[in-house]
Amino acid sequence: MPISLPQSYDNLLKLNVKGNPLGYDVVCCLCGEAKSLFFTGRAVERGSVWLDENSQAVSITIHVPIAKCLACGGHSRVLSYEIFPYKAYTLAVIERCIDIYTAANSELGLRKTAEKIGGKAQPDHSTIWHWLCGMGERLYDRAGNSVMRKPPPATSLLIEESARKISSAIRQLWLNNPEIPSWKYKSISRKEQLSACAKLLNTAKLLFSEASYPLLKWQQSLTSLFYVTQWSFFTQKKFMSIQHFNNSQVTAISFQAPEEEMVNINLEMGGQNSARSPPNSNVEV
Ligand SMILES: [Zn+2]
Image (cartoon, rainbow, N blue to C red; front, side, top):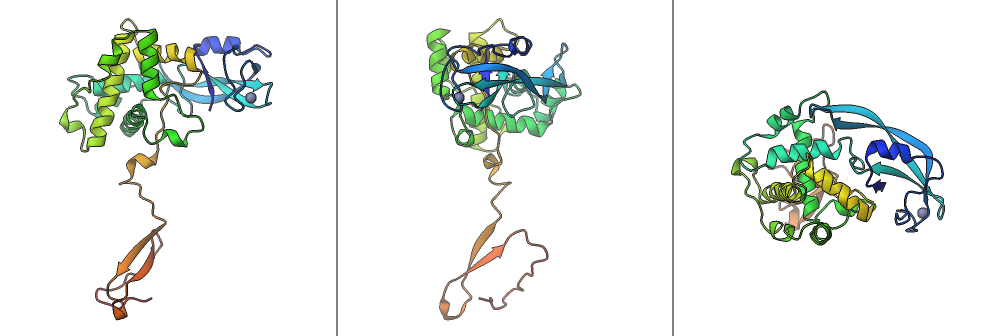
């Protein structure tokens, strides 16, 4: 899990000088030691999608600094608060998509939301679907976090810390689940995910009403407390169990076997040209 600092990307590049300490309260994700992390002056390149001055999505190559831990000798990537680990899109793009789609009285669907972002790196509507799913699940601290090496802090912890340090009014706001138009969901879990995302944006706007990107501002504020990307979330196929089922083996039970004995037959799923038994034929055991 990369380390996240409450610095902008531009500032982070300036700090990446060999021997520069990351900060005395930044803890190594590998060994848990504090005061042991130092910039190496080296960086790795990776693609990243940001919003340009016209709020359109544009893809650029960024340099992610590498830090070394003097306690364990391990290396960690260091991200600015705008960048999500393992995701090409930065938080500003994701925040804007969630805001457009879940805002009260929003009549835009996923495709229209993507079009509204625009730009050469405009996200696909299915990508936005996954973001809403992953973020929604993350806000409930449900599936997804367990597969991450170091899960982000629990949502309840972030809300409580923000209530204590920024505004206690968010405690009450967090109890209310915004209404979502019924045409935007077909299941209760999807309704919960969308409502949670809308609540996150509403809360961010209450905390940082002056900010152009309140969730991004909130992330910066929280990163100075925890040094990991606070609102990061995981998108995985597990959330779509209906579309992506485990097709390794399926067990069928036949009632046609002799002696009325139940027989287990393993049907290889996904095999090429597998023969199908005609109706009413004897089952080979
Ligand atoms: Zn270490």
